[in-house]
Amino acid sequence: MVSFLVNRADHPLTSEQLQGGFHALSDPIRLQVLQLLQGRELCVCDLCEILEVSQSKLSFHLKTLRDAELVNARQQGRWIYYSLNSPRFQLLQHFLDQLGQADPPEAATPCAEDA
Image (cartoon, rainbow, N blue to C red; front, side, top):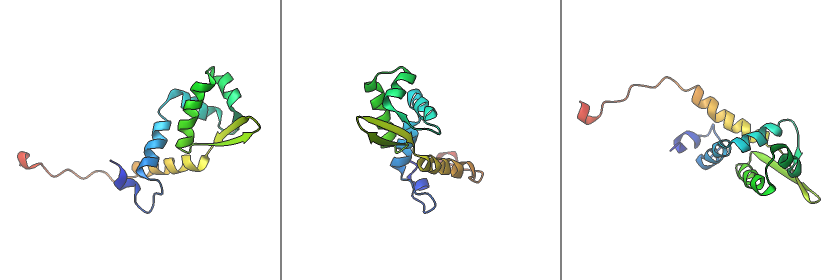
């Protein structure tokens, strides 16, 4: 469990938010969606066409990305337009940066049966 790492004052994400964010990043289709949204907003219909997936399949993946707050959704008429939620990626990056800057591990205390 990583909750002891994320409940500190210097990190605003909860354990559940981190798990959701990294889960959302664990699927190839969702990664493709995120890459397509870099620097631009796209409609669901455009994403379906580019990725060559059905709208129902894409909707499942977009819901996961929305639940993780990795994308913003804006409705215009009957279409929904998606863009990246950059601040959420920055928070996930901050978490990874903290792990990468950790001090070298101290040697573990031997277990009782090894002593």
